[in-house]
Amino acid sequence: MFKYLLYRLFQAFITLIGVTFLSFLIIKLAPGDYLDQLRLNPQISPETIERLKHLYGLDQPVIIQYLRWLKNALLFDLGYSFQYHAPVLDLILERIPNTLLLTVSSALIAWLLAIPIGTLAAFKEGSWFDKLVQAYAYTFMSVPSFFLAFIFLFFAAKTGILPVGGIQSPNFEKLTTLEKIMDILKHLIIPSLSIALVSLAGLIRLTRSSVLEVLHSPMVTMLRAKGVGTFTLVKHVLKNAMNPFTTLIGYEIAGLISGAALIEIIVGWPGMGMLMLNAVLSQDLFLVMGGLYIGTIMLLLGNLIADLLLAYIDPRVREKEFVK
Image 1 (spheres, rainbow, N blue to C red):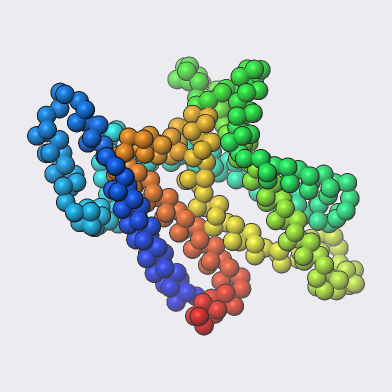
Image 2 (spheres, rainbow, N blue to C red; image 1 turned 90 degrees about the vertical axis):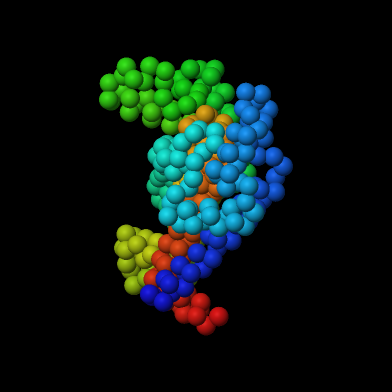
C-alpha cells in the first residue's frame, strides 16, 4: 500500500506541473496583460510600468517566469495580485470559507437524500415510488443548475420570501449572533438548492443502479434463502454497492473549491467563483494562477483519496497498477 501511495503521489506531482505549465503558457499567449490597462492611464509614466514589469519578472522569458512562479508556488507563495494589491494566498483564504459553506452544504443535502431514496427505489423496483424517483432523476439531470438558480431568483424577487443575492443583508452588522446565522442560511438556500437538486438526481440514479446490480446477484439470493432480516440484507447490499461511491468521493472533494463557480457568479455569492471571474477579466496573472493551482491540488487530492480508498477496499486495484 505504501508503494502504491508513492506511485500515486509521483503521478500527482507530474500532473500538477503539466496542468500549471499549460495554464501559464495559455495565459501568457493571450493578447495583452494587466499592465496594458495601466498604460491607458496618462498619470502613470512608461518608466513606472517598466519598473513594475521588472519587479514582477514579466520582462523575462516565459519559461523563466514559470519556473520562478513554480518554485514559489511549491512553498505556497502565490505572488501578489495586481488588481487587489494584496497577496494572492490571503485573497484565496478569505474567499474559500464562503465557497466551502456553499459546496459542503449542497453536497450534504444531495448525499444524505440520495442514498436512502435511491436504495428504497431499488428495493421497490417497478413501484409507483420507483417510477416517481426515476422521473425526478431524469428531469433534473437534464436541467442545468444555473437555470434552476435563475428560476429561484425570479420567484424570490417576485415573492420577497428569500434574498436574491449575496451572503448577508445590508444590516448584517446590527443583527444578533443568532440572527446573523439565520440571515446567512436564508442567503444560502437558493445557491445550495440549485446545486443540490441537480447533484441529487445523478446520485439517486447511481445509487439505484448500483443497489439493483447487487440485489440481482447470487449473493442476495443466498441471503434471502437463509432468511436474513431486512436490516442485515440492506447492510450487505450497501457494502457491496460502495465502489462507485468511493470514486465519486474524489470528484466531490475536487469540486469543493471550483464546483460552484457559475452559481456563485449568478447569485453574487462572494466565493472563489467571483474572485476568479474578476481575475480573468482583469488579466491578473498571479491571481488566476493561484486559483488554478489550488483547484488542481484539490482535484489531485480528491482523486488520490478515491484511489487509496478503492485500493484499500479492493487489493486487485493496486496490484493491477503495478502489473501495467
